[in-house]
Amino acid sequence: MIGLFLGDTDFSETVLNRIKKLNKKYFIIDFSKNNKFKNDKNSHRISIGKFGKIINIIKERKSKKVLFAGKITKPKFSSLRLDLKGIYYMPSIIKAAKLGDAAIIKSIIKILNNENIKVISSIFFNPELALKTGNYTKLKPNSDDIKSIKKGITYFNKLNSLDHVQAIIVKNNTILAIEDRHGTKKMLSKLQKKSKGILIKLPKKKQDLRMDLPTIGLHTLKDCKKYGLKGIVLKSKKNIFLDKAKCINFADKNKIFIKII
Image (tube, rainbow, N blue to C red):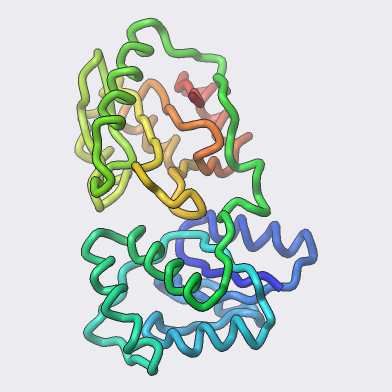
């Protein structure tokens, strides 16, 4: 029995579909914003404040492993109703929330570890979503692009563990834009059309690679086309790549390169 803590984005549905294809027994703790898994008989809609209830369900189902998939949005803490364990654990979750959504999940993982519940990688059942090193499109980065990519990697290496940056845009050896807590889409919206920049998405320093891996999908490629980006760069085996065939086909048609380093 596998416990699935599922949030928003297509990734959560991709994981659930694979679990079903493998005929794995599962249950869902639905942390999505609009209760997107309400029609699944194995789904439980439980507030993050009811941590005692969440842990009881995990133990009642005799689940020894759980995973996180999809974006878990920061709750409105003032409106949460807490059970006893919620009261005990909530201060650490509120403290983590000040560092961003990913920090909330890290805090929950720590709590689960304290309860002897193992958290496995979000792509444990979907290893094909993490691409290996290589160029996946007909178009490849030229020598100037390579210099810009190296500039971007150097920037990432200089970040400290408290920075939230997971994506940047580089062009002509210059950093055009930097992602903040609002995410990649918001960063891209600040670009001029036909920017000719390169999107680099890499894991944050000291990131828990069991969750919150840099993710791209067809929506990302469409945004790249919209703002005239030349390419996308991800880290080998430390990424989530949704709808790979559709993305590569779209990239080839629109002369966008996809490079895994």
